[in-house]
Structure formats: C-alpha cells, structure tokens
Length: 431
Ligand SMILES: Cc1ncc(COP(=O)(O)O)c(C=O)c1O
Image (tube, rainbow, N blue to C red; front, top):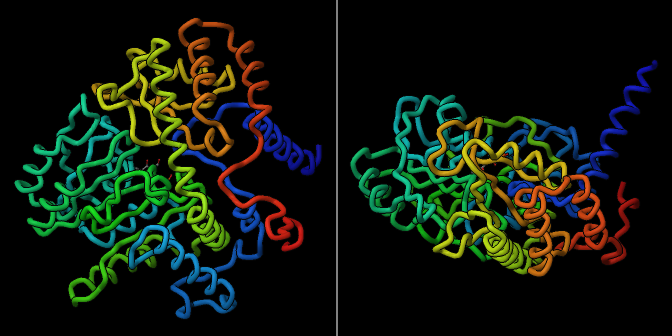
C-alpha cells in the first residue's frame, strides 16, 4: 500500500460524506451550508497567509489586497448589524467569547451566566473558556415554562452580586432574552452586558429576532456559520462609539482581547468568505430568516400534532430557528441514532431538569439548512411525518431512509445566495 492509497481513502470519505448529506435531512440547529461564492474564497491564495494586526498596521508584508478585503468585511458587518464597531478576525464563536473575557474581566472576578442545563454554551461555563479565564460564575434563575431567563430573579441577582460582566449565551435559544431589563441592571452596577448571538446572528442580521445592540447590549458576538450562513468563524460587534476616554479604552481592550489575545493568523480566506456572506445576507437575509423561523414554527406544530412533546407550547413553540423536543429520560442519544439511520441528522440535547449532560432526554432541531435548500411550510409536514414514522411508529429506519432520499431529490439547489452565472460569475475563472 502506498501513501497515495491513504490519500485516496481520505478523498473517498469526503465523497461519501458529501453524498450522505446530499441525500439526508440536515437538521442540526448550529449547522448550515456555504454559498458557491463564499466557498470560492476558501481555495484562494488568502488561505495560509499571515496578516497579524489590522489593515494598514501589519507585522507582515504582502497584505495589500487582504487589507482591502478586511476593510470591506468590517464595513459590511457594520451595515448588516447597524453598529459602529466590527471585528471579523475571531476564528470561531468560542474564540470570540474567550477574547471578550480576556478583554473585559480578570481572573477571580464575577460574571453572571445561564446554566449549561438550561441551554448555555460551554465557552461561558466552568469547563470552557470562562473556567480557563478563572472567572467566578453565578447562574441566573431559569423559568422552565417560559424557556427563558427568569427576568425578575436575574435582575435581582445582578444587583446583588454586582458582576463585572452579565453574560447571555444560549445554545438552546427558542425565545428572545430579556436584554433590556438585564442591561439596565448591569449598567446600574457598572457591568457590561455581553450577548453571545452564536446561534441567532443570521436571524438578527435578517431583522427577524431581537436587536440586542438596540436593547442595551454592550457587545454582541457570535459564530459566522450557523443561522448566518457564512464560513466557519466568529465576529465581535458593538455600538459603543468611543466618544469618551473610558469608551475608547473599552473598545481598545475589546480589540486587544481578539488580537493578540486569542488570534495570530486569523484564517484570511475565511475573512474573505465572511465579507461575501455579509453581502449575501444584506441581499437575502430578511427573506431567509423569515422563512427559517416560519419553518421552525410550522415544524414544531406538526411534531406536536403527531404526538411529540415540544417545548414552549404556550408561546407558540419557538420564535427562532430551533425546536426542543422531549424524548424521555436519558433517551436523546437513542432517538438521534435512530433518526440518523433514517437519513435525518440531529443532535441529542439536555432539556430543563436534566442533570447528566451525557444522557440528555431531548433533541434540539433546527430549520436553517432545510430552508436554504428551498423547503417551506408544506415540506415541514412531510419532514414531521418522517419523524413520526421513525420515533413513534418505529418503522424500519432503512425504509424511511430510502423515502428521505427520494424526497431530497427535489431539494438539491441552494437558495438565498448569488447563483452560478450571476453577472457572468464562473467559479473556475478566479482561481
Ligand atoms: C451560544 C454559543 N456560543 C458559542 C458557540 C461556539 O461557537 P463555535 O462553534 O463557532 O466555536 C456555540 C456553539 O454552538 C454556541 O451555541
């Protein structure tokens, strides 16, 4: 066997993976697919180059064209999110979170957070970035029925413990957070309110979710590859204008937290693809975000009608791209495995009351990718039928998988992005 065989093996796995996803229903709430124009940027010469610093102030030469790209990316990001400060360098949502913690809070100081069991992300937990930074974490009370932070309890908590940062980061994010109230309390005690929009950035950019920077958040950050369908990466935004010395210092610290705090080379090809994703979102984001949420609401209702216990019933199940379903004590993994066998890709998830993160009792489902593939409300009914057949009627997964493959045949084209042929665009000409 030669090393070439190993290369062939890897290429084959990639091909099989492509085929698997092209024939399945991808419903992981944090995933999405890249447009052809974004994808093109990933194989340009920007890949692998170094550009430490910021445009015009580089440690390395050769950045002339990349500087233009980064300046444009920041400009488009500010336009998309209607704000005055944008940092497009973080290489992931987690990197953005840790950079912000590095900038704005010191080891031993206190931050208020959501509990992991109630849908927080690990990067604001003791086993993740917040733990690495040595921060003292105090959890907000949570209202299970409303699937949200208990606003009165959280306000009282912030006023009592006087944190340095009031954090809002949610991986289970069905309904908008009470940012106005939390920000008022935080500002009263001299704390900053940080809104980790990893999951909902594309919905916010599409103007179909809450607008945290208008509601009082000092910083909004997130991943650029979830509901915002760009390349894998992160970003940091703020509407602080730097018009006082204190505010200038705040923005300087934020900037310094990302570089040199948590980046060196920051994957320049991804920055170029982010710029394209922002432009595409300015053009298509509103329609895409609206349809994504409509699909999620319709799908949740369809599951409910087919006998599933879906969270948030009293509030219309969801106002985002996500749906949270209770499967049974410790049964989330079994359900997600059954669905995978049926060609439906999901993930197990903790639900309120779960204590063991390795034996969750629910599934978190998302509609962003199905929406990008062109599915609408009527398709959500068909998808709910597949779930019912797999998990309630317990039909053989292989039979459902064949039907899913047939169903997917009509949904192979990507929507809400500039298409091949747009203004004579030819994928092969640039490279
Ligand atoms: C709330 C939240 N923050 C941060 C992240 C981390 O994002 P990334 O995977 O881009 O590092 C996630 C990931 O799902 C998340 O849900």
